[in-house]
Image (cartoon, rainbow, N blue to C red; front, top):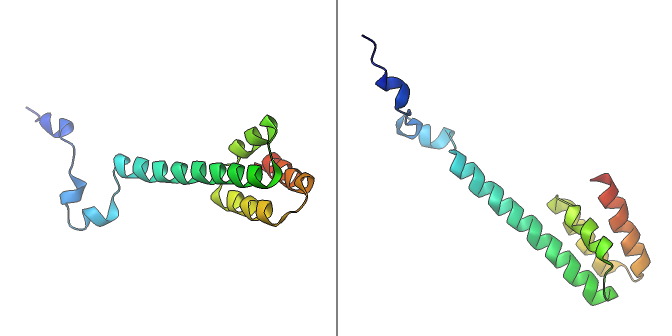
Length: 102
């Protein structure tokens, strides 16, 4: 008779030699993804805060476009542009251009 219990026992890869170093669990991956999403959300919030402080109340569509940007590098670049631009229209065009590329 075949021992079916081997099919129901998960292998403990972390117990193998160097298993801890080579294998990430789903929980590990999800934790990292959560950290990345938190950083993106914080960058979006920072961009909105800086733009509102510099240019006044933002149109809801512009905020929506900001929320659609999902890369930290792009958000950080736009944050720099918000600080450097003197003209609100130039900054808004920059955000619109970037959000179309996303």
